[in-house]
Length: 215
Image (tube, rainbow, N blue to C red; front, top):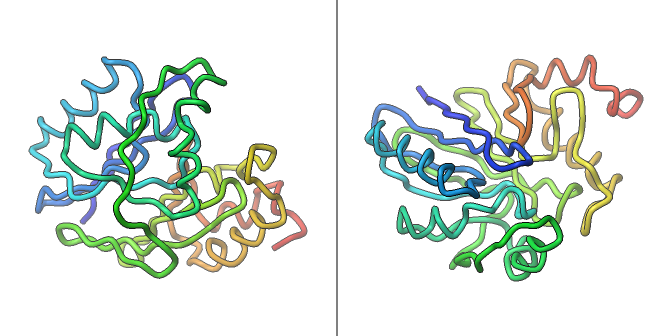
């Protein structure tokens, strides 16, 4: 059975997800720690729980979600995994950071990339990779079919959807991603977004005002 530790980091309160089980293998999704005390919080949790990071994953590479990328890569000796269409955000992270007042060191780049249908295996867990662009190029969701949860980044929120007014955003593409990849999942699937509280697929079908008339 998965355990999911959620730690909100940086002024944008990005949810960093640490998923693990009794094997103690874990994945870190969207390491967003920026300040030194945030980096320490992430490292201390991993150490205190005795976890062994197997992968660093990104839902997408907007600057707020990858502020801790270089730290996590160096701390846990892992190169991050993301979609190839996110590479532009990583290559230009320092420039994007300046726009929001962050001093960002160049992140360590992936050696390999993820795409639709890939599977991330760690411990006793498997996460299915879903390509869900629209909020940002290269957006990915990670679905545990057996335990019925999905980590969605900024694609879908509790009562909301991702903004599409940032570079590479597109509203029609986002809605298509939500309809084709997420709302087809069982209603009981728990949705863990990149900001704010969790929800379920069923709840968003019933009450999300941004999806009224499209589902």
